[in-house]
Image (cartoon, rainbow, N blue to C red; front, side):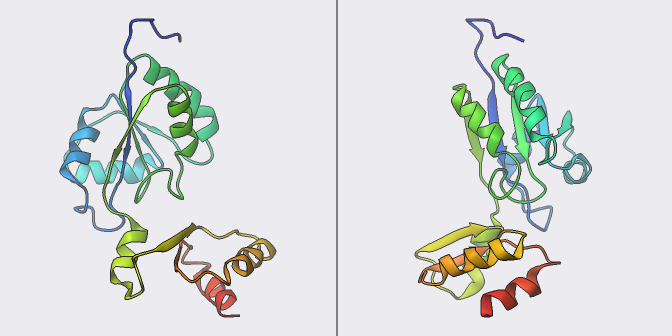
Length: 182
């Protein structure tokens, strides 16, 4: 598809979704999700339950780490043709340790407006109740899955004095904590 020269491109909305309680979604996020042409969801079943809970009806397609490369060009073309698209992950903000980075990057390259719809953040929520210094912190995201690379990352961070925030799977958290301690 080619965009008409006088046609205004659509907007890519990067919509934060709840990290736990389904009611922790903003009114603005619900309004956007109910009015866009398409919702690109990390897991359509998960997002479908969230939207059904809030009586929001929309058109959805899957957009996750396994199909992000193939879906991005199609979504960019839709945006160029004037469609509005909301990008959502299963929890939190898309493209922050979640799928979406490639789509946002391509939208920026193609001069398509990208609009953040803020909401809950697991990192900020955890920091706010941690009792650790919050005036300056380092967000690491998910550590490497392979042990050697993960240990190398930890060694590189050993001298860091700021509060550090990692994301980790419940299945790997105990192993990771042991590695941090050692």
